[in-house]
Amino acid sequence: MASTGVHPRVCLRHPELSEDDVLAAWKGVIASSPRLQKDRDEYVAVGFDGNGRLLEMVAVRGANGHWLIYHAMTPPSARTLGELGMGR
Image (cartoon, rainbow, N blue to C red; front, top):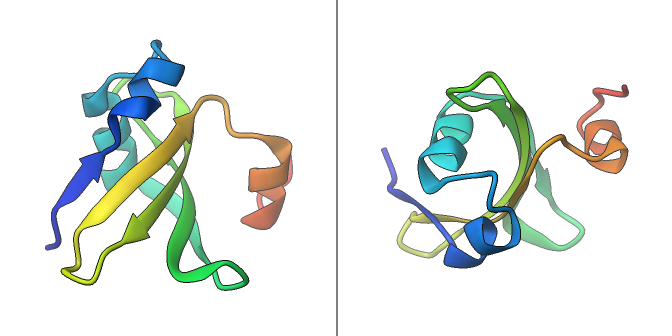
């Protein structure tokens, strides 16, 4: 399994989220999709963290297979839910 990291900016912009929250949500993804119009290695996803919160995440996969989550927030935006076919 490829390693996964969380960009430090995520927790700075969203202090209600910890790195562990984001990683738990990434492991518990319930829907994801590549963003082919931008970068075939960029994915948008939603998943539950250890506190039962649904998080929106955007990550990019590097050439080495490592995932870097550079955006996360809760609750997910209506736009992201729509992009994943999960309208509110």
